[in-house]
Image 1 (cartoon, rainbow, N blue to C red):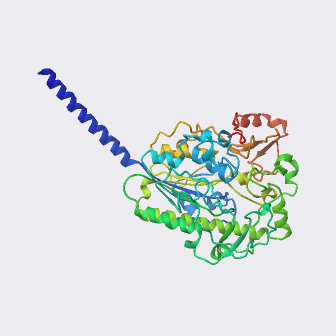
Image 2 (cartoon, rainbow, N blue to C red; image 1 turned 180 degrees about the horizontal axis):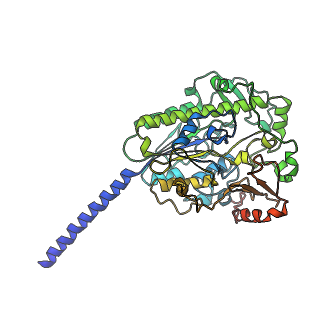
Length: 486
């Protein structure tokens, strides 16, 4: 009899504990924050809050920074779209994955089998995941480029579809509109005003879909990723954005005629891993010959303002949805862009114009509105930061570090540097003051950004700075995945 009573007591106690645990888990799930991840393609530091260009007009991005923390010294992990985005979304560096170019499909790599991408991880944790536009790599240069390398298992819904990341683009009838020679060096290098509404643009279509998702959202935590394609080339956008940046009086970047004389030959002449798009001066020479520098800068500034308008529409939709205080918002760019600095256009370099990117985090209840840090951080840190902010443990494979201590204002113990890859055994390290670059042939560059923000003077040969090079080189990866043996 006593045994029977004891058995009933144990069963009752187990039932009570079960319901307590279930209630606690339910409460924790109810407290999970939504996530809004906004990626802006090819956006350098030409935004108002970063002061990269005096004529930049980005009121929406600036306002977002005013709501959270601006990482003013944030740097990309890779110098072109696919390496950068693969690193951010897998949490693994190019040196680990071997994804050094835009033409490596990360989904086919054995070394990435079983690795949960950022959206797939959130989906596995019970989030409803939605995506639109360029999240993983995709482009509009080739007929199959619109699809890109999306993760088909990561989304509950994707616009235009899981198999195609980018909507149809609007462009001028005659291309190239700027009259460029049309050689591989100028692939996509074009700009023109187009007669259309914002909503008809590829980004406009993406944002309209996102607005509908935010308006319809209900029940359970949501992970929403939005890819804004501009200011990626070509710069085809409505005329009103060109009008915001009148051609008369456009400021072009400062250059030093002798700038490239003290850098290694490999940094002057080596082609990138991406087809025949050269990192050399061909495009810059043509720009100067045709007297089109101001026009090109206008096209980029205008495209940036258009992208900012798209960001503003998304944030307005978030506010209207009533989810503002329950949503973690992150804005980032995959890499920067040269507009004549160091006689370069596009990206694919290990200098500031390519590596330095906008990175903003708004975490309700954690970030102080209008806060800013100059500590060096990497986009590789986005994955672990977002999982911690969401109250999730995160997968074990992540190579970045959580930035939550910085978001909380705890900077005294921060001792990290940002590493950027530009191909096999090509890396640059950035701390609060210096940039150290080690090229594949062993040649070096070293810049003091405190006294030389344009990186005009290579100090790598200065023996008095040997300890600086040694300290920064400790951050370089020890192993390098072979892109030929994936």
